[in-house]
Length: 206
Length: 206
DNA sequence: TCAAATACCTACCTATAGGTAGGCAAGGCG
DNA sequence: CGCCTTGCCTACCTATAGGTAGGTATTTGA
Image (cartoon, rainbow over all chains, first blue to last red; front, top):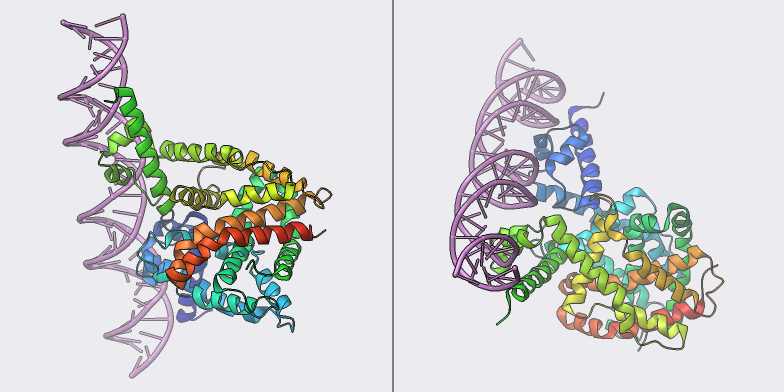
């Protein structure tokens, strides 16, 4: 049997995973700590025992996501071609597993909310990630001379292209039917490569 | 002086506008009817007098947005060139006024939430709008033969590229500073044209 | 002119939110 | 063995949520 400490860590992880899914689905205000607890067969205080407040629980989920973002780079094999490397990085962001979908949805919510909820304190971790994207784009031939605002605008557009898909997938499934959308989902990575390739080759607007 | 009916309609509009801004900023669960009322100098019942329930108030805001979406087409001058027409349509979606920003943010929230909150009933109005985009893309030379999943994937990517900008703008302002981001905001339409142009010219992936 | 309609308000009710206080039983270490 | 820590629970508190009931003063139209 697991030791006491191991058991505790396991529970902690279970809470984190469950909270992540629920926050992703309903948002911070849409989920109560009691709901998280109930979904795990725990009492509300069982949850609060590990994470003192709801705010901190949410923060822990966000921290986990931040960590994933920083290690994202190591998941994609380094290519010699800067354009390919950039593309691979973006493709790696596609949310093709439930965990990744949750991550993307939660990040989108956070971006929407952080202005409303006490300042932008929770977003620090996005910066290095974005800086990396910017640097990678700069390394692509034809982009090194582009203005900073061109680079940023392009990165924003690409992030939108990648992330909007997983965020909107359930809705689009409802609108267009599962059959077509399943095809879209599986074709998406390929389409994204083409899109990114087209943009990179055309170069910045300025 | 305004008649009673006119006065009432005016109040109704004021409530709608205020609710729209608040819902966009904090989401359905993040705003209380009392807060909406307070922001207008009304009592909670003053608001409920016009919109029986919070749910219905939210629905009315959504309805207003739906109407805006359906009339969006008439705002963009019809060009002869299908590619140009498609591009113009997308550019018209860019949220460059507070009202439009609210609209985009609220739609993004709705897309995130509608799975969680009682069914997808609120999304019907997106369909004609999307169908229109699809039809316009199909009309572009080189795209008419593309598979439906290619078209859809492309539309999703483009919607993401357009909408992510206004959704993430406040966060990005916080991260990169207002100076650069202001430049990005004003350069965005131009960059978007280039992006869309590049994609259209390259054609679908299949 | 006077009664019906209506714009908006002041209570008030119930459910639930986040969180505190404190208990209890089962490890783990001296 | 016995004490202390700790994983988790049962109350319980206060604030606020959405919503009902019913009032009042002003318009309006017959």
